[in-house]
Image (cartoon, rainbow, N blue to C red; front, side, top):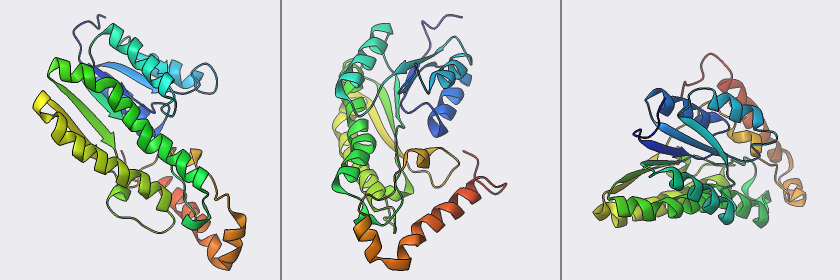
Length: 234
């Protein structure tokens, strides 16, 4: 099977959830698919092999969206193979807990993945898209990028930031034939919570008394719903 004339899509955070599903869907539609994930030689080696077995047009590469050098290196390799038509910014992590109890370092770590990670990928691909006079960037945001809700404060902040950046960028690159869009899904079964962390500031949690247990109970109920027959199908 030749991959020379296929449209090319790059999907970040391809190890699970929406990312892995997107790899499958784009491959089924005849795209040249590049999926990115961390630790392709370790804990994600089996996932890499599984996705690459879908089609000769699927290649999984090592990339950490929180590391500028990693992003630049990965995109340089992909662009060496040919132009990128579509970027799907999907990599993300979610923390659920008392907002005050998350440390600044934890908030920064989440922002580094969900917001700055997306910026790194966009900046890596935009020069070639502008030069080509075409391209599509799809940013996976969330309903949480429109409405901030209790216990999701740090996560919502990352999505609000992403939405602001993407909306401004959309107008700026439109004259070059490049489109930037946002997708705002609600709750779907995924591994987004797997990389989450409990709040680091235990002294703050202690000050909330019994209320500190509410986020955990909510997460448990949320997880149960997503594993049931009533769960939405992405």
